[in-house]
Length: 365
Image (cartoon, rainbow, N blue to C red):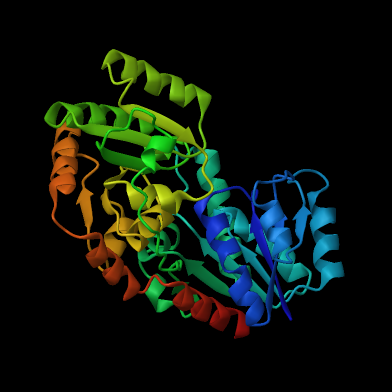
């Protein structure tokens, strides 16, 4: 059994974490065991799932004791591969893996940008860490062309060790349930449902979504907005302030974390996804896998998905909220069938089997 140690901050319900865990069963059948090292030192909501899939989790908090703990882990467990998903910090991780004699050392970029403002000190730090990746990574992976371009530069295609491996998903058949929304919204009466599935981070643009929905409601007042995902109390308070101001309390619903988001997607009418930055957004691919239309930002990852899958409308982030609302309304009125979207997904490069095959080839080299 080939032993792979994945490096994450914590094993919570982020896209990269969930996509990696989703590969465990298939990879184990191929003779590859996934274990995890979390740099926060904290337990995550996916820990029990990982253990059920025969994976081990090691808690090595970044700090004064990290070097010793991580070194001891690498030298006692005899991993074949260290696969790091923590942006430029992977440079330091892979340096330690090299010192420990790990032959296969992978840096995997999951986003198009690190996000936020970049101070001079942070820029210097990232420059040093990028140099360490250049020196110590045997393979450099990214979830889409845009992620590779954003982190590694325009000449990445000239480097043999650089590869784009798209995340993979299954085609899922979900029977329609005419009473689905009444379980969560007792006043539901056949309105169109605009859905957002995302944790309340700044990149996901929740405040702007409230502004867009308000304008959509002025175009068509027979619509609801549903937010699914981990909530942030401060951001939610700002959203509620807008919702109260626009008198939308009966039209906007917060459903928090949900384990089976595909059920919500399969019963919604459109996914609103105006993120400021993403890698290859799994939420957009999950929506396509069940036939849900998407209105999303002009981000490289979404544009790459649109090249392969129907039902995705892209709006520039620079366009006004009014323009977003009008395009959202057009999507709601679109006659494209869910079956068309599912069929285009089923014949795309984003299937689980492709992801497993390509990643296994990297591990086996």
